[in-house]
Length: 335
Image (cartoon, rainbow, N blue to C red; front, top):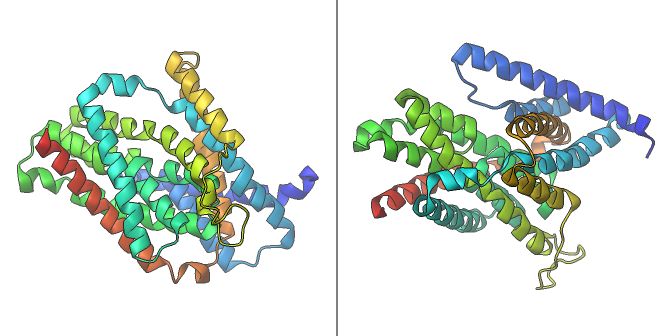
C-alpha cells in the first residue's frame, strides 16, 4: 500500500493520542495521580471523536494500520520490559501463589463472562486484563485471538473504570480487616488492575508498601508471556463460526511475528543483553505506540455497537475485581 494513503488516518490517531496524553497530564496535576491512564483516555476520546464527527474515507486505511500494525509493534516492544528478576526477588513460595491466583482468575473470569452471555474473545480479554496486567494484557491478547475493535474498546474502557473503583475502595481493607502492611501490599499487587493503579492503592501506606505491591504486580505481568504463547496455540478456537479454523476442534500452532519478537526481547532483558535504561526507553516507546493504537481503535468504534454488551462487560469486570480480591485474600490466609 502507498504510505501516503496511510498518512491521514495515522495523523488523526496520533493527534487523538497526544490529546489523551495531555488530558492524562492534566489529570495527574489536578488529582495528584492519573486515575485513568492516557491509553484508556485515548480509546475513550477516539470513540467520542469517531461518533461526533463523520470521518473521511481517506482516514480509514491509516486508522486500520494504527489499530493493527502499530499495536503489533507496541506488543513486541513490551517484551523488553519483562524480566524474571522480579520473580527471583519474591521467592518461590510467593511466586507460586501468584501463578495459582493468575491461573484461577483467568479460568474463572472467562467462565463468568461466558455465563453472562459474552463471546469467547471478549470474555478472554476481560479475564486477561484483570488477571495479569490490565490494558497491556488486553492489547497483547487482542490481535492473537482476533478481537474486534468494539470488543477491545469495551474491555479496556469498562474494566478500567471498575479498576478505579477498586483503587478507591481497597485501602479501606486495612482498617476494616486489620491487615498488616505487608499483607495489604501483597493483596494490592495481586488484586489491582494496572501498575499505576497499584501504586495509587498502595501510596497511602508508604514507599515500602508501594515497592512490595509493585513487585507482586510485576510478577503477574511476567505471566503475560506464557499466556500469549498459549493463546497463540489456541487462537483458532476463538475464531467466529464460518471463518477458517473455527469449530475444527483442534488447536493449531499460530505464532504471529510480534509474539516471537516479544519472547525474544523478554529473553534478552532477562539475560541482561538489554540494559535497564534501554528497557525503559523501549517501554516508553511501546506505551506511546499503544496509545496511538488505542486512539485508532476508538476512532473505529460506534456507540451503537457497544450498547448491548456494555452492561454485561461492566458486570463481568466488577465480578472479576471481586473475585481477584477473594482469591488473593484466600491465598494470604492459606500462607
